[in-house]
Structures are given as structure tokens and as C-alpha cells.
Image (cartoon, rainbow, N blue to C red):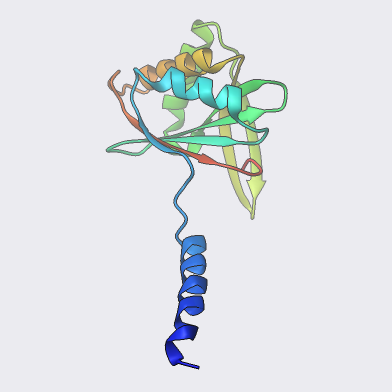
Length: 156
């Protein structure tokens, strides 16, 4: 039997293993203020319970997480560690003035305490509005763009 016959299955196994290791995220988009509502509507309508959409600010720091909850709602989570506490209090005031009811949530994981300012919304449009209010309250420009990717599985 020629030696090269074993090469084909070996390459196939290597290809499968390589694909598993270097798997890109299923959902990776550049999101601007004009397309944010449609992306959040898509998450609201098609996301599974526990799906997390992470919005990372392009060209700077800042992360938002939107969690698809079982009761057909989206929860905007703003990690407090990202900004100074004075900034997050201003965000809370702005969201309350706009009619949202933000709450504080916290969890500890591996000894590290994380706190979030959480806003539960009924649909993708109101979640997009909450993100835009948060962006304005943080003093970011209104045309701030994000890189969005979906993390599946249990929420952090």
C-alpha cells in the first residue's frame, strides 16, 4: 500500500481539529447607531434563553452585555468596573429620567465581585434606546460604533 494513502485521512483529521480550535464567533458584526435597533430586534426574536450579546466600543474601552431572558425580555447590563462610579450614577439618573427602571445586580465568580447596572426592556427597540441613552450619559459621541458578538451558554 502506498504511503500517501494515509496522508488523506490524516489531513482530514488535522483539518477538523484545526477548525475546532480556531472557530470564529457565529455572530460578529460592526454595529452603528443606525443598525443597533435591528440587531437587538434580531437577538430578541431569535435568541435562546441565556444568550449574551456583547457590544464592545470600537476604538476605546467600554462593554455592554445584553442578555436574552426566558420571559421574552432583554436585559442591558453595564459592568460598573468599566467606568468610575460617578459616571455610572449619571447613567442611572439618565435612564430613570427616560422612563426605565435600572437596578443594581452583583455576582461573585472565583472570588471576583462584578456589579452591573441592569435595565430590563420589552423589545429590541427599547433596548437600543437604553444603549443610546447610556452612550450619551457617558459622554461618548452619538455616532459611537460597536463590535457585536454573541456568547452562548450560561450568563456570566
